[in-house]
Length: 302
Ligand SMILES: [Zn+2]
Image 1: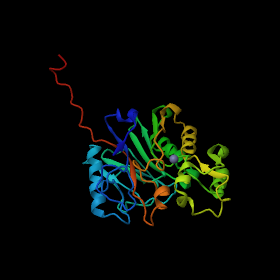
Image 2 (image 1 turned 90 degrees about the vertical axis):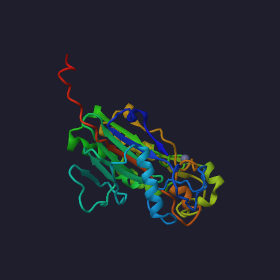
Image 3 (image 1 turned 90 degrees about the horizontal axis):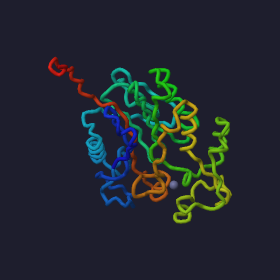
Image 4 (image 1 turned 30 degrees about the vertical axis):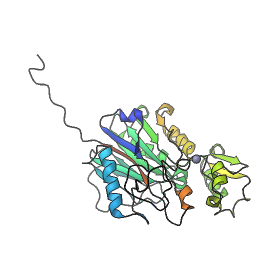
């Protein structure tokens, strides 16, 4: 149900994790999972699933995180670089549009919903500030990860050595075929864009197994030769490094969503299976309301 980064799980005040598709009550039309039928943990309302199932799935996730009393904060994600800082009470128009949330307030559980796009969590371990970012290719080309770190520094004075970043499960270079127009956008934005794309002469094993999945959007490609793949993870790692996060404090070894149907929803993989959307997972991060430390009594001091 939940993947966590061990280095972050050690922090008692921090709540964090990346949900998988397992351990829920939904039965998605395209479930062909190793998870038993009717056990999908879909976390957003969608065609083919009920609001009641989603509520129960969210409740289970909160219980698993030991965060039942926290307030789950969601956004209307629009593939932008908009990041909202929540440092007082929640604005009345929430959930507003945007793709990033930042807070230093205890009791809020920031979330991004994903099914291939990368969920990225930022943590300032010293100031106790957290951020959740939704990073698809559009947000990535707009440098949302780099901007997120910049916002932490600007708003809270975060220092490089106190920053941690966790990149959750998403579509990796093995499966993320894109068109030339995506490469053009990256080349317009990053001097190192050529490092972010792989060319492949042959269809990937996934394409051989499920050719119909890749049948759409072939106009811009010369059939199956010379396919272009985007490394979204590497692109975000480079942004985090450039923003000042140390390489040893970027945790980025989460699996590929498209390669693991038993573990993850994948929009790319499942959208071709039926005309219905796939489920959604979440990356979440928040600050636990810790009981105030007891002042030592006179007797304790001897
Ligand atoms: Zn893959």
